Image (tube, rainbow, N blue to C red; front, side):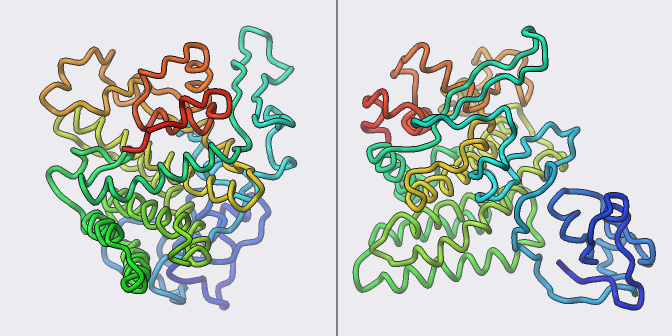
Length: 397
């Protein structure tokens, strides 16, 4: 954050007063409003924290004392309500900490952890049968084969970035017109990783640490596209450091899982709150689906680290189950020339979306392996690989 309200004018922001909560007097928003995405305003500040004029001019109200120049990326822990405005219809689980999502007492009553390898989402008892939500079974624990399979796929992001500049969560046409610096750095470091040897491990470790520090220092000025590229880059950096023990970077990487979590949450919020214009429906799909899959892989990365460190517990399952993506996996392979030939329904941005939990149940009913691309096999391998070993073979691309 940029500052705090000075001691001579100490008064909580309106949102904290209304909720009868302690306010840390942070500016341009206190930590509670920052986490919850609330409009943070102070009664005695000479300018409101979110006035465009103060942002554009860089003028800081006289009642504010500066305390640092970069945003505060320390995650504050579990929230009481959704990080996003309720009207945006965003999943509140995305903005809960890893600890809270793995604790039974913090999970809503409609989520029930089974004793075996799954979580069952059962309908609440109060609504009539016609309004009950469908039963969804998804994994809560991964066995050794599933874990090895998912880690291999996460590490597969690195050669994919080095050789093609794309991954299962970064479309090949995403940065066709402009390549953000964050993206270029990630491609370069991915190529360096492929030359990994004893002599250059220190160089690789320092380079990744330097790039992450650079991301932090520039994060306050990111455009939405730069923000997306930064989260994508951090996913790749985390995959390298968390899942390659030869580098001995796991301790440093574990600390940055909170950073990845928070940046992903902010990216998700921005994608709903900031309007974007695209030249064609194809460009809109490429950006929005890349963003949706990026959020998915961000959660996946942290979830698999939980599996390794918490006895197989996939502690982000409630998040993953509700994250959406485009149900038509073949759309991802389309280029601009054949996009218009698709039978894509209404053509709206959100047309044909499905969440992970629902899709996994639908797939189990058909078990058509041929319809899955690398992205689909990763999702299904993590979900049903214990029951169907075919899912755990040759999906890294």
